[in-house]
Image 1 (cartoon, rainbow, N blue to C red):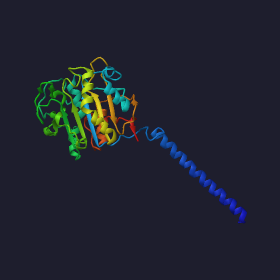
Image 2 (image 1 turned 120 degrees about the vertical axis):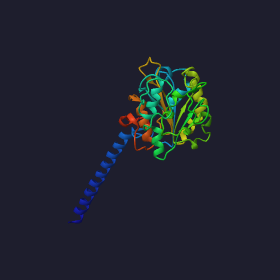
Image 3 (image 1 turned 90 degrees about the vertical axis):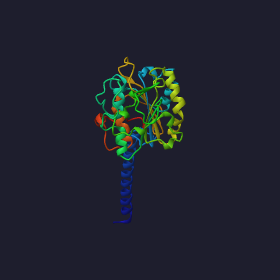
Image 4 (image 1 turned 90 degrees about the horizontal axis):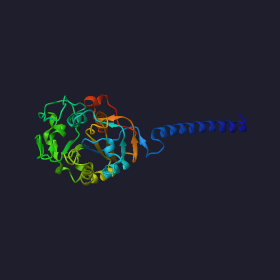
Length: 300
């Protein structure tokens, strides 16, 4: 091949190769942008893997009573700095069956708030799954008379908000008093529930009371979670029976996209499924097996 023709041929070949490479790069970039929303700070599809997840459960208030309410400035600050699920729903009424649903993917046949027999069920639940997987679990219960106490009530403490005592496969010793909530958050279990007493949880006292309690007791953890790959979940057991059982649910932490909102319909089983998947559990309890992960509010 003459020299000039050969050089022309090489230029054309290199040009085609470069064009192909650019096309592949553009396609990859388009795919990445579609997945991430155009920025690493945008919501990602997969659930994150937090080092610690703390779930706080309040009582008996509808979405509109808390989200946007002047009486709940701290919860609304978490919403603004985290994620707001605008279509989060409880399962039923009254309170107790919802706690069992959130913890075990089933109401376990509980239909009222009466004091159940401790250890009446051996069904899979979030704690038993974590323990079986070699992970750590704990609950912190305001007003609980002593660690592991199975008493039905004591002052403002009510066992109806503590479903872990209903399961024979969950050690009662994993239920601690709230005063045992650690100051060193790195020592927290990988997953824990915090249950305020009947006043602090807004059941017997106001939204403002519960909001102030959350700020005073857990704002330091929330700030820590923001920089230590951890998560705070604030949710409610049920509404006030006037809002279609639509409840506030707010997520806050390092992997939560600030100011994000999801209008997807979620319920207690979806939240349970999400926590299970976040922590790599190989099984799902009860109705969590057919539930969906909370998505669209996480950073990549």
